[in-house]
Image (cartoon, rainbow, N blue to C red; front, side, top):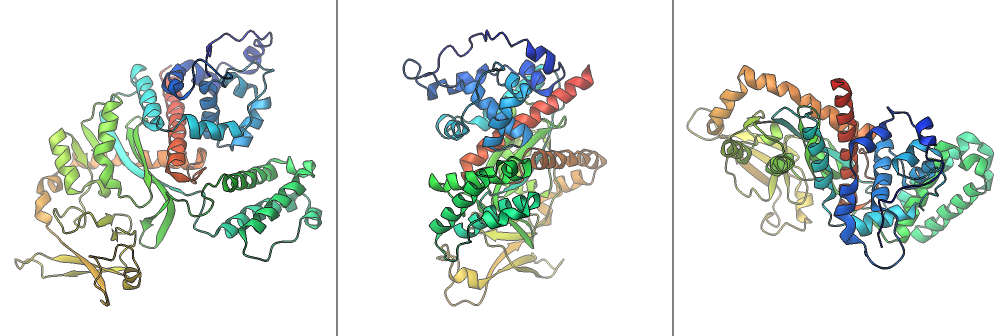
Length: 486
């Protein structure tokens, strides 16, 4: 039950915050900038309003998640820090003497309260609303790109994954006190996952009997990760091959296993829209959605800036219909117009190769046809026939017994003359220089807010992580721009 959530805190110790949490403290400024009551309004249907025990305020629970993202902490560590960090307690609207939540409450909050809320769009919309209200966003340009996030659970066997996490913990402990080696149990020799789980639990037990080592931050971090992995397994979550993660390609010879976040950002570096997808999805296919979401957030758009992934035919036509400039360089391999089996083969601009429906990338390409002799040239892409033979989508795609599988695309460079003329202009080149801003934003998400690796399994977990991380970076950017205005 939720009720009386906005009651005044009458603790005699509240004045401590005026002493220890400075006026320019980031968390204090976020509290002053954002009216978090919108969280309560959005989530109240997820609670019983008239019976049962009083629940912890959904605003406070959401703020715990926001602190996790701002400071890149685990569930256990954000709760632990909230015990003694007065700026955290102030941000959480707690009295200095109030107890903190149990870390397991955060897992339940994510699963039970945030499902089907549309948190990503809601939080981005709120920050854009604040930025427009404060007259921070003045441009009518948005920059688009996609960034990848590796799945928390790699493509390893369950045993290998558990072994890796327990090994990380033992190595951290050895750096503090090498003699602890003698206290750890013998490693398992079988392939049984349950035996590896028992071993990991025994390692945790040993560490908990050595608090002088376990409480050292570098050790404690690895200990908390191992505990969360075991908890995930116990709750029957995906512990190795994430059910939603997919293989995506950043280049012809490199790939990742995980997710993509497709992002639109204003010229002032405020993210105006985002979509989280599985890793194999093509960047360019989401331009229309990003534009529509940005407009819904309140943006006026007269220019889109992106890399070659966004210059495909449908996007050029969409730009003409919506009357905005598309500052995206043509690539003849993407923008040749109509082609056969468009739903089965997508072009990966980083690798310069086509990827089939199963996620397999072509291994080489060759150009056929004679140039300037009235014949359309073609690029022919060759796939690994060994993979095609066992592919679940081989029916209608691969001919049994064939020694090769190819996919050919006609090159029709004349279909995009207007866009080609535009991309050779000085105006195009000037606007294209702004694209570095979104690459810097992607780097900030990854290296300061834990977006390099997913914090949980599944697409839903990735959406929650994306929502809180983007909300955090937008609020930080708004505060910085407000500082510059003062």
